[in-house]
Length: 264
Image 1 (cartoon, rainbow, N blue to C red):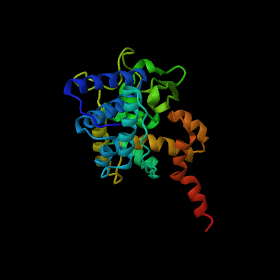
Image 2 (cartoon, rainbow, N blue to C red; image 1 turned 90 degrees about the horizontal axis):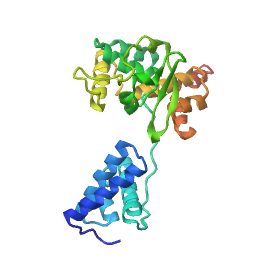
Image 3 (cartoon, one colour; image 1 turned 60 degrees about the vertical axis):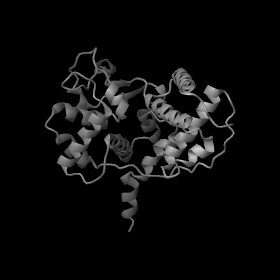
Image 4 (cartoon, rainbow, N blue to C red; image 1 turned 45 degrees about the vertical axis):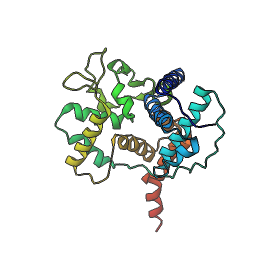
């Protein structure tokens, strides 16, 4: 595998083919965006894969893995060459999710004066939605008669069904042909807007924990587990491919820890 010394025109063609390969595999927007940005830098650098990776040793393990797999994808699917690099990828460290108490969730939801912002927080928590899933949610995805929400093309392009919580029923009053969350300018909410809604509400509610929109999904799963829900049902609600991913919530659920404390 030699160095890349392609002209700008050749680089443009390679990126075009990369985009095609990403689309054919229906990778998520975020994965595609990441791979394209990484390979653009790779082509500009003129380095070999190992040399290119060494440029990012000051970055996180997660980012290093992204760079590695972007290179692997590019070699195997765009250049159609074997990717023989065997770089020692550090294992992901187990970082426990930030979880809010039920009382903190209530304070957070009650914090905004803006009803739309309050609804955003309620859907994140009471449906356990990912950020992208919330942004793309449409009124037609809500089945009020059967008390279900149909999450379409979640992570990995997979659909799933979650329950429609009683507290969300009062919010079901929109045009069935439109998305649920949009700004005053009739534009779909973006990630930054949702993140800012959570940040502002957290500040008003006086929550000291460093939280994000995903913290409400973590809290949704943890509270279900603490309430006695079977972890395999929680796995389905969250749309996790592997049970191992869901099992991280056993490390933060309070139920068993409290029981142990009672033994002293």
